[in-house]
Length: 175
Image (tube, one colour):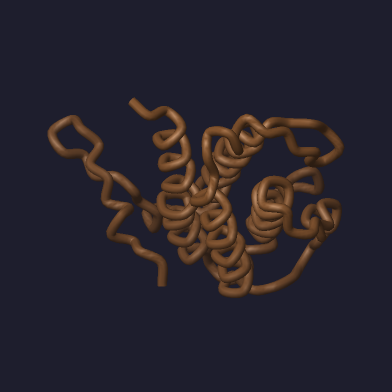
């Protein structure tokens, strides 16, 4: 088995396909006013999380691995109390995920072993990719939880099929 090819294929799949579709479905189910709402001062809104994911993927993959300039304002991602609408935030996320996918599509085993300085620390490229995928997953499921709290029943990704969870999310392709 070619573990490098499998690692890269699955990383690209999660970022470019599965998580992207799930986030879009969750965000589009939010009622008016929910995108930038926070349950308390210490929590982030879905709008903050979308901006944060865009910044994180750009910094770690597009810039850190791919070599593009790092223009991230991490504090601004969390500090915003209002901002772009859902369509603009999803469009920015789509654009950075497309850029990241192009970077990931060019990586080799030698590239994965290479070291990059990202957020002030030295990490090998495989660690950087792994970090982005697991970090993206965590925030994806936060966004889904918020959407399910605001719009009960509107977000559904699996159907019970005789005790097996049959994915229905692939049919929720991005608009």
